[in-house]
Image (cartoon, rainbow, N blue to C red; front, side, top):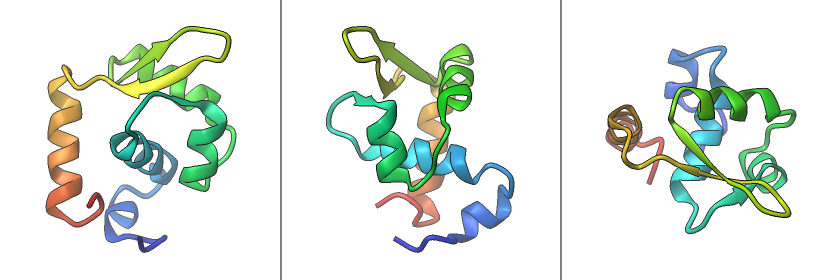
Length: 91
């Protein structure tokens, strides 16, 4: 995957958000913050993940280690995923 994708250029300033959403979209199970950061090649996602949870885009799975997953029931999530697929950001 191209690291400087045109979608990231369009949403400049939102690169971290796009990368986190892409990683979560490709995940087969809920992921820890550290796994998300490693796979998305970003760091310091705590505030971003809290924001995504607050707006209903991401769900938290509480446990010994907090894990995150996309809220597939959210219509915004589904629309963003379609856009990501349509422009080749999500394969």
